[in-house]
Length: 139
Ligand SMILES: [Zn+2]
Ligand SMILES: [Zn+2]
Image (cartoon, rainbow, N blue to C red; front, side, top):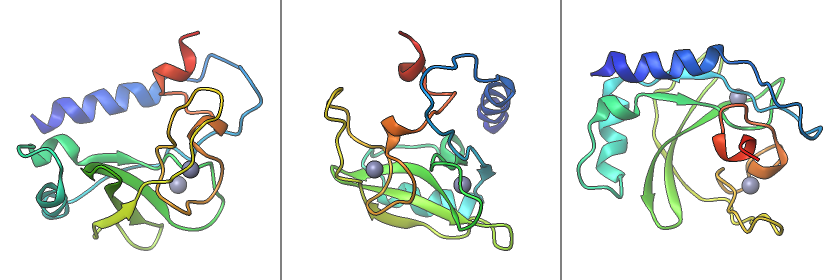
């Protein structure tokens, strides 16, 4: 089961951004697989009652590309305005679960909420280019 999810993410990773739309800066896109123990902790906070921890082990950093600093990966929704995240960098793996408030910003044109956590670095979701976000590339 875990391998299916991993394959899906890997094959997505091979896709190059084909849409040159906008001059939006790219996202970081760093991938990480969280340990099962971290996934199980996140599941305990999850808003959905039944989640297979193997479904949420592959996370990626969707922050605007950043030369320094920690990567943050969304794991699962925990409540209406909070989500579980993990954090890692080149020296330390994703060993913790952080329950963070959602970024309160909303795109004034699309009325779409930002998918990052409150006080994140870089641009909001609609200000950066995520080549894997189908909604941003289907026009
Ligand atoms: Zn990152
Ligand atoms: Zn934001």
